[in-house]
Structures are given as structure tokens and as C-alpha cells.
Image (cartoon, rainbow, N blue to C red; front, side, top):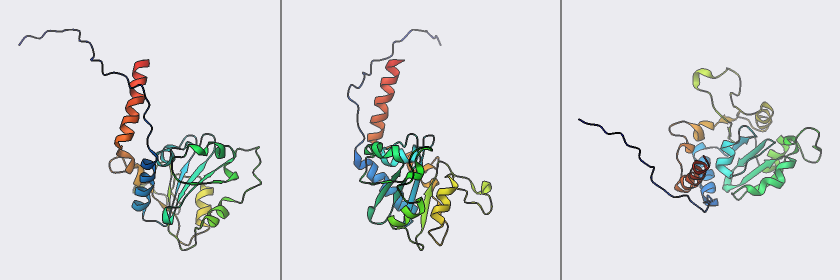
Length: 208
């Protein structure tokens, strides 16, 4: 069998000129699927500068320099808790959500005296002592890694403790529903997401 080595030019696939924006309904559907899968009265999704993936996946909002929480509850109620700087940036959220200023999430040195504590904000939203609450952090532990007596949720302790102070049964970790590597909700890309990713990949490839 003879082999011949030739230089072959890559075919021209063309470069997309118009960026495709993921429709708002995709984010709304993601929130709905997550809420239904969690089987909780409320789910609370944490995000910050380094750990924004889940929050961005559900809302299109990136918290930048502060912490932020997405709270999803009964009757499709949704709240986005942000710090001082996050308020002006919250228009980036692509879901129907009520934005609430939560100044404990603001940077040190800024005014943090004008809003209630986090636990009081969550109580005002409607979380009651008998409610079942799930929390989504930035990753989750496997069974053998769990520490006895700890929350084992990858979210700042003040947030977990604040939620637990409002409810009778401690919060549940629902992170796996989004982030499990084979059957998590984030492992499946909608066609709109694929088109958007292809636009970015093609432009990056052209730049290289």
C-alpha cells in the first residue's frame, strides 16, 4: 500500500458576521427546569467573581466584583440579590426577575447601612420556617467527602447560616442537579447556545 503525503488547505467554512444572542426564553426555561428538578419550595443560587458559572447559566448576569444570589420560589417568583455595584449592572439579567439591593454583598469601604441583613431580606421575600430550601454552590462533594455536622455546601457560611436561621430543616445542596458531569442540566447545550458558542469560536479562530 502506497502512501502519499500532500499539503491540504483547510476548507473555508466562512466566518459568522452577526453575533447570535441567546433568547430570554432559554434562560427562563433553564430556571424552570432547575426548580422542578430540585423539588424544593425555594432554590438559592450563589455567584461571585470566580464562581459565576451557575448564575450566568440561569440568568445571563455576571456579578463582577461582588457576591450575588438568585432566589427562585413558588409561582415562578424570582429575585436577584446584588450589592451596590451590581444594581446598575443587573439589567444584563435575561429573565423576569425582581432586583433587590443586598448591601452585605457590597465591597468593604462602601455604604452598607441602607438595607436589612440577608436573613431579613430572605424572610421578606417569603421564605418561611416550614419551607424546604435548596442551595446551589460552585461545586459539590461526593458522599465519601462529606464532613459530619457541616453544611458541606460550597457557599460562604454566612449565607448558609442565614438561610438555616429561617427554616426548621437545614438547607439541601442541589448543586449536582446543575453540575453533575454526565446528567447535570448544564451538560446539555440548547441549539441557541451552540450557535452562540460557534460564533465565538469562529471569531477566535480567525484572530489566531
